Image (cartoon, rainbow, N blue to C red; front, side, top):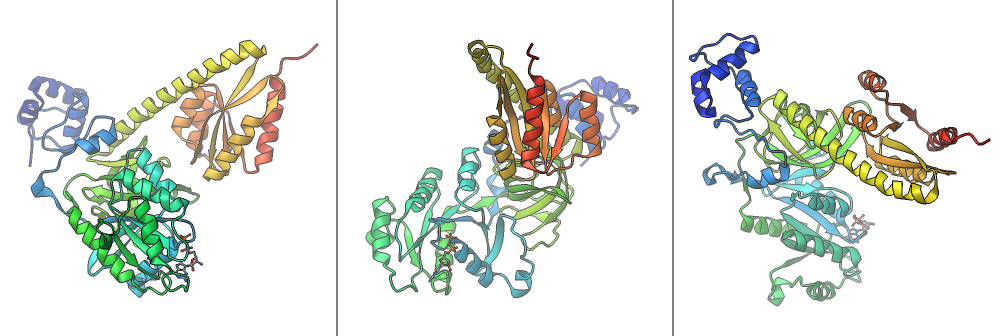
Length: 480
Ligand code: GDP
């Protein structure tokens, strides 16, 4: 498939001379019959803010909307594995069930490779692949849904037969219902003497989850996650429910999907577990996730084996992003690196703009307080930490610091190393950046210095607090 300057001009509804002029400015001589390279096509499209029809590259910035708007032709769709989430009350056996499924449906050799938790894994059930999301608690499910990401096709709700329906069981039912996802109930711990499955059925029926044998449409399976009894039947039921949904995806296009988990790894940088939902993700692809981007430098499956291609419903761990994305963020692959970079930067600017507006909205409120309290001064702080817990602890303690009339205003507190967007935000809001247990790169330190942004690095919380407190004292106007 080749395109000449003349043909592209027609596709873009432009004069050939505009394109020839643009290429000339870029240092390339061309005529109307010059065959364009893919890179030139991308550059031209970028310049003229449009896309050639032969490629699926998406320009709009509302990514969730994009996902909804991409309509694949029926003939391009092929069946894909179901994505399943196991939910239920604490101690009812979710982890045990996941372990049992994994042990009995992954070959011994492969099982040896499962050493690290990546948040999702795939097993073989009767020769068919099934993807399980293995994210602790229900928060991941809720927060992903809150952000518009729908990743689960089926929810298995585990209820211990010797216990009964508990608060988190209800929560799980609510989530599954709200998401419109079919439920399979696993009545667990059937090996226990006190097991009373009828009680579970009637309690679930009270929540509107009516068992099939009572005329409803939810299948209840009796299992023991511990002994494995009934687990094959549960999995078969699950496949049946999946078949009714006719789950399909187009594997032959640029890939998109959702971030399941993400973290900052000291040695490898940002690491993300992605669930591919559309297209095929290839090692080396350029992707945009939220406002971060990069090339997929290395892609591994749930058994820590390096792979080169990942099809729909496949969970993969990737490295190569320039920042840590959030769970629930949508990722998209782009045909070209520059395009990915450009889109990520546009998003970054928008995000900074948004946060800047938020900060000014906040300082408006503070302004009112100032009037009330006299001469209130404020220190803006931006926190970056290696783990969520530290970020939150620092934020909470810093906001509690109160030295006379000076207050701390934490404008951003996230996990990850210091990025360019952090420096830009700090610059825009006159903030100090506190890094906890992280090491910014030399390039970032240089950038901060150039922009006059102060970075303070700590690995002991009270030291960071002590320092900030004395800064606050220093800021106080001298009293005579
Ligand atoms: P989770 O909090 O829902 O992940 O629950 P766990 O899988 O950690 O299980 C909680 C406890 O129940 C553990 O001590 C398990 O060994 C036990 N357990 C789980 N499933 C069964 C079962 O089928 N039978 C029995 N007897 N114990 C079980």
